[in-house]
Image 1 (cartoon, rainbow, N blue to C red):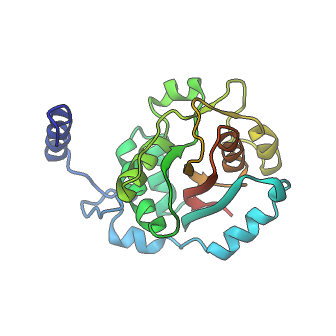
Image 2 (tube, rainbow, N blue to C red):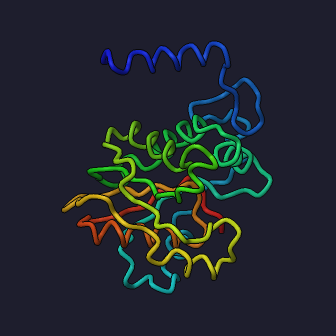
Length: 229
C-alpha cells in the first residue's frame, strides 16, 4: 500500500468500524463477500447463459453488433433481494454496494475471457450530479479488482440529450441507445470488458460496444449483474 492511498484505506477502515456493513438486500448484519447475506444470495435465480445468448441473437442489429459476448450472474427479481440491493446502489446513495457486487461479477467472469481493460457505460452529466456517482462505476471497479485488470474510468462518455432508459418501453430503448456514446481516447487493439448494472434489451451494451470498436477496441464483451428478461 502506497503513502498516497494509506489515508483512504484508513478512512474506509474507520467507516467500517463506525458503520459496520450489512446485507445490501435485507439489512441484516451477516453480509457476505458479495454484499449480500447467504439467505438473500440463495433466493436470487442465476441467469441462464444460453437464454441470454438467444435473447441477444434476436436483437435487430445482432448480425452487425460489435458486442462479442455478454455475461450475467443473476436474473432480475422484481421485489426480490437483488432488486432491493440494486435500489440501494442506484437510488440509495450506497456505491459500496456496487463495489461488493462488482467483486462477485469479477469472480463470475474470471476464466471466461481475457481482457486488457475494464470500462463502464457512461452516464449523463445531469444524472451524475443528481446521484453523485455513476452506479456502473463502483461495479466496474470491483470487477477490475477481482480480475486484476485495469479500469479506465470515464472512457465511455454518454452524449447529452438522450432520455433515461429507466422509464422507456423495450422498443423505445433500442432507438434511444443508438449513437448515445462516444470514446474519449484511442484504445487500439484492446480487448474490453464493458460493465453495466442491469441488462434489459441489451441496446445500451450494443451501443457502448459500437463506440468502443470505433475507438479502436479489438473485441468488446459485456458483463452485468442481472438480466431483466
